Image (cartoon, rainbow, N blue to C red):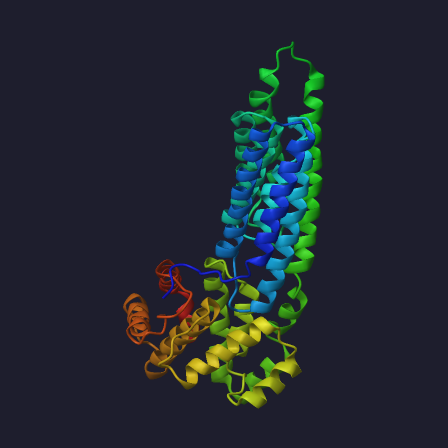
Length: 399
């Protein structure tokens, strides 16, 4: 059972980024007429900041073992976004500090990676901008607070893609921070025109974030949405064939898919792909060649194939450890459903103590080493057990 994730990505993109970032910041200082001591400071600190960005992405960029190919594409895409924001952050140093559009940097970097990675890298870029612009710690702090707050209200992005309320809250936070941190410190009488640039900052930020959300939904979030909706339709031809040939296996698949959906959503996994695996795990052939033909016929994605392959390997050899969280959710859901169904087959009026049953099922998994090399954590297991125990009324459908 793994409690952390080790990243073993390539060092080259990070090294290139660090060198370019150091050259940019030092170059800005040189053009700005800084003396030798300051240029050395820029060079040293920019190398440290660039190294932090590289290390953060290599160690903590979210990697999905379900589909390594997609993860590699996602990391490459993320590096492109980081390079773009690196250039913009340097350009921001030439703008008035009330027009540093840094809120979208925090939100977009977090959207295409994770809040930990996004906030860390955005903060590093913000620190570089504050350093070469000569702004004090207060300006850094106000944009840091606004950025982190915006990440919290905008993310995670759901299928409804709620935007209006988060945009309003984010804009209010940024305006209040700029009022207190910048405008009120200006040694002149307050003028309503002082709010023009902060309002423009908010407006531009909202447009950029909304555009990023639309791009994210089409590139990642809903890329296979139509396919999974078709596959998860209980009126699907293959599922109807299973219902006709083996009603018991059909019911096992339906109920397994239900729990796959519930549990994967709770664990923050891709619920569509895990639910789809729940529907088709009984239909998936054991023979590898037949399985590949089945995959091609159904048009399964690589991620779905990985889950089903691991499930079949585990079924043929229960002594091995699972690797993927998604496969663990599938195996656990199927086992719980199958166990309850078996007890009701013996006695439809049986009074099953589901709490003890769930504990016994998971104790058996742990004792057999099912999760010993798995990405799943103790916290994930606790969440799964809680969901299974809460579904007492649902188990009546398994009679």
